[in-house]
Structures are given as structure tokens and as C-alpha cells.
Length: 441
Image (cartoon, rainbow, N blue to C red):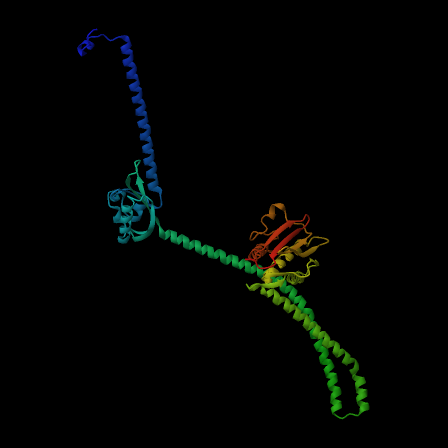
């Protein structure tokens, strides 16, 4: 066995072609790896530059105040908005303690939060005053920890949103909301006034006839009384019997006595008619009350429909079908408002119909009272049917409706624990009002 070769012996050995090939291959591999590594470094460097440009762009354009602080609380980066708020340049702010920018009480709070964030990395949010060029200003602060890949805290990012602008925005939003509520209230009031106007038209017409009747009978009574006064004056004057008999025939007292009875009966009938009208109006006036009681929905619907027909001066006759009486629990005035809206809409839809038909049907379905108002009018187009209960939606011409009738009616039905639905009859429409027969929990 030959002895091992010494280093000087290896050096003396000639390089073979195979050895040179291995050396060149290793050199090419190393060079390729260096080129790849250089390319990766360039890509990472470009990404880093892109990230810096993005960060600078954010810091320049963000409207909220932003500062990046180190682990010891020194400012490393600031936004342009922070420069504008404090009146200091970025180069003057970088390196300063972030706590110097806060009012004393706020500075203590920020210090405590930064110290606590070294153990609990959850972001925090609170209000604090920042010392701006115009004095302390309130901000909504948000502090979040900066963490490296190994979970160590590198510092924090502090963001402040001006509370003055937020409070002003909230104030403006609240004012706009209140204005919207006032406008809606006014529109609802206008809708009620429109319904009241239609109602008063029927009231004026209905009251005029019986009052005129009472007035005419009062004049007749005055004439009759004057004749009886003439006769009784002669009686008191001691006129002879023959003269009184002649005077009685001359004044036609026997006939006037019968007429007197008729005048009294006529005046009573007229007064009773006025009384009934006032009673109906009192029932309708319950709409302003929130009290609930048991009432007959059939009678309530008849009163409401009767007043709408009188006020509209329409030739449409309302036909009632179904139950003669049906008790429900709720606000009679509110339910009458629903019926008035539904009947009025039906009458408006039947203006151009040659043979109009308007039917109000009341029936019982288990523990529910169902009132249906149906007509044979042109109906509602399918593309509009889904929006009929939306506020301010109307198919009527401008000035002929506010579009709140069905919306208000739907809300009243829901407040009573019921619902109001629509059905296309083709031709015609039907609105179905469901109300519970008794109070439910």
C-alpha cells in the first residue's frame, strides 16, 4: 500500500481536463447566484423605495394628525397635517419627545398608555388635547403599537382626529335631522288638513240642510205664535163668545194648531240631525288621542266612509258587506283615518269609470278582524305596486296628493298590531286591513 500524498505532492499533480471543467462549473454557479442575489436586492430595494414613497404620500395627504414614535417616545415621522396644526416643521419635530406636543393631563395619559402597550399590545382610543399653534385643541386619539417580525415593540403610531370638526359635523347632522323631522311633521299636518278639508266640505253640506230646516220652522213658529197672541188678547179683553168663534175661524187657529205641531216636529228632526252629525264628528276627533278602547270597526268604517262620500261630492255609492258588528281593541279615530284614506283613494280612482263599484267588506278570520276596501278602477301598474306604501309616493297629479296617506295608514296599522296589504284585482284594487280582535301581549 502506497503512503498518503502530502500537500506538496498534490500541488505537483497536473490538473486534468475534468478538474478544470468542475472549477468552471462551480464558478458559473457562484456567478449566477450572485447575479440572482443582486437582482433580488434591487427588487427589494425598489419595494422599499416604493413603500417609502407611499408612506410619504400618506403622511403628506392624510387629514388626521399622525406621528410615528420610537420605543422611547421620540418622534420619527410626522404628517403634514401635524406640521400645519402645530406650526412647526418636520425637521424640528423629529427627535422631540412626543409627550411635549400634548397638554399636561393628556401627556400623562399618553405616557401611561405607551408604557402599558409594551405588555398589552391592544390599540387604545381616548380624547386628548394637543398643543396647536392656536392653543390646546381636542382630538380623538388612537394609539397602536409597532411590532417587528419577532413580536418586539418598536414604538407606536399615534393618530388624532380633530373633535371640533366632528362635533360641528354632528351638530349639522342633528340640525338636518331635526329639519327633516319638522318637514315630515309639516307634511303629515298638511295631509291631515287635506283630509279635514274634504271632511269639512261634507260637514258644511250636511249641516246646511237641517239648520235651514230648523230656521224655516222657527219662522213658521213665530207666525203661529203671533196669531195665537192676537186671539188670547181678545180673550183677556172679555170679548163675547160669538166674536171669539168668528176670530178663531178668521185666524184659522185650528189649522195653525196642527201646523204648529208639524213645525215643532220638523225643528226637532232637524236638531236631531245636527246632533247626529256632531256625534259623528266627535267620533272622528278621537284621532288626536292615543287612548285605546273596544269599538265596533263596522260602525267606525261606516262613519268614515260616509264623511268621505259627503266631502267628495261623488256619485260613487259605498256598499257594505260582511259582519254587522265586530269589536276590536284600538283607537277608533286612527282606524277611521285609515278607512277614510282608502275610501278617498278608491273614489279618486273611480272618477273615469262608467259603472263605479266600491265595496267595504268586514269579516272575522280566527282572532283577526279583516276590513277590505275594493274597487273596479284602473288599478296600480305592476312596476309601481311595490312602492305604494313609501312616504311621498303618489300616482296622482301634482297638487292632488302628498303621497303620505298610505304610508301613514300602514304605520297606524302596525301600531295596532295589524297590517295593511295591497292586492291587484285586475281590474281594480283591494286594500286589506287586518286588526287583532283582542289585545295581545
